[in-house]
Image 1 (spheres, rainbow, N blue to C red):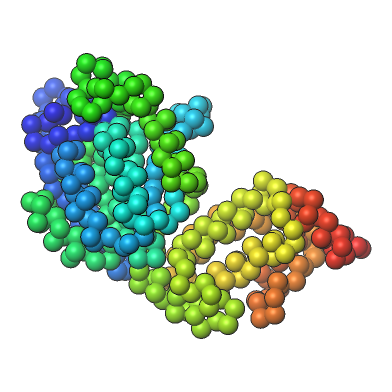
Image 2: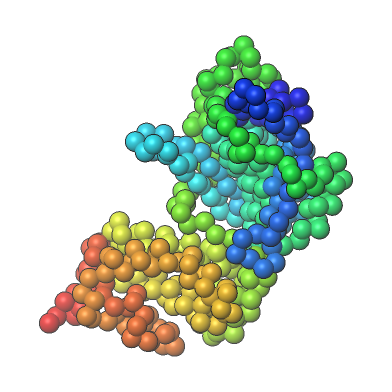
Length: 361
């Protein structure tokens, strides 16, 4: 027990209070407030005993979409070997999968995910505007547009709203891996596990392989509410070329643009047709921003700002223009993604550019 009132996970240890200061009292409860940069979504931050997390997640399942993607955050080998004073964990996403399938895969790993102090995990469906995440700070957060559904669930499990609730981040604390805890002190089921089974780097890598997960840039985090996604869907469905994307998760399209930019920076290995498909994706994003309400347009612009900047920095021959990929696509001369070509070209792209006369004076 880390306090007489709240059972914290094994991997989180609170510092003792300074002499002469009152002992902080940590209890179960939750706080609720509007989610930043949205008009219709809420953030829940929930503290409960560690052994109640599995039951709480199970109770959430009927309220979650049928398909979600899994989020895993941990310090992989690259992050662990970083020379930075405060290295950051790597974030991994799975593809969209049936929620029940994800939870079934998680079952043997769940106690370790909950108790290891260097791991965070969650589930999300961007199209439905919901995310549930249990952070390495061991706070359960939930983003949703349907706050009544979550408040009813918490009330049914005796978890009360408490605006004065204390969190581990309110005081000094240490993060511990299960590996560094004395073996004799470990409770079941950890006491019988091997070192590799207790090593978060090992079991997180197993999960990444099991769910076909991929890394996501930690500075590319955003949240689009269901209402915002509905507005974007209506907009795209009216466009003859973009209607096929209308029912997709727009957040996924924003991630695709970021991935395309990263590929271009590293060295684009596709041909000219594939390169133009990436530019077409940016056309679509621009179309959505042009047709959205100012607040949503600005939000999307902020999301893609860094990717846009990285792409512009890697363009050369910017006095030339690469024509839009198809009739009806934006043709304004100030669309930067058509001005020039990426610096790091693989053989297929360079070959196609030569064939179409790009390098002729």
